[in-house]
Image 1 (cartoon, rainbow, N blue to C red):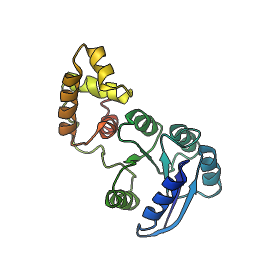
Image 2: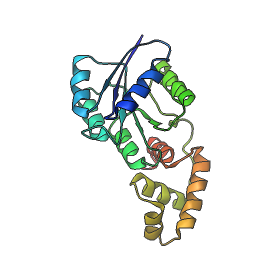
Image 3: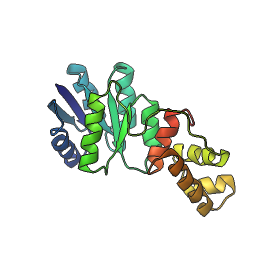
Image 4: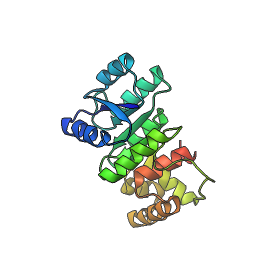
Length: 198
């Protein structure tokens, strides 16, 4: 029997996630709040098995809400969800103690699979987890990943490294391929979990 709490200030997002999560086997209660302060108040009164927090929209910010919740309740199982190019917020939330993340544009089957996996695992984790040996990256690929983790655009990374933006994109594609990820957010989360960035 599983309970969940969703935090995002968009009613449509809360309702959509509630519908999808309602299809997860064993889910018995799903509550939703619109703000970080409500999240903390609700969780303090009625802890749940899993918490989903939007990284960009919850007020105070999702990242701040995650940090505050986990500072008060270190064993809370928190997953953040956000835009695939919002690597900075996702990384900050994971650094603050979130156990994993979901892309806001994940398909319904992907979302159901991720939630089912999360709820049946001993440790909550994202689709990108720290398993096996650390992936060997070149120095340039590590520099690109570091820039991504700081929320910098390809153009900003290129200027800092005195390279063309196309060259940065090439390094990024190689980086994604080596890590087996689809986008910046997954790459940064993977790097964080493997200790490649901090």
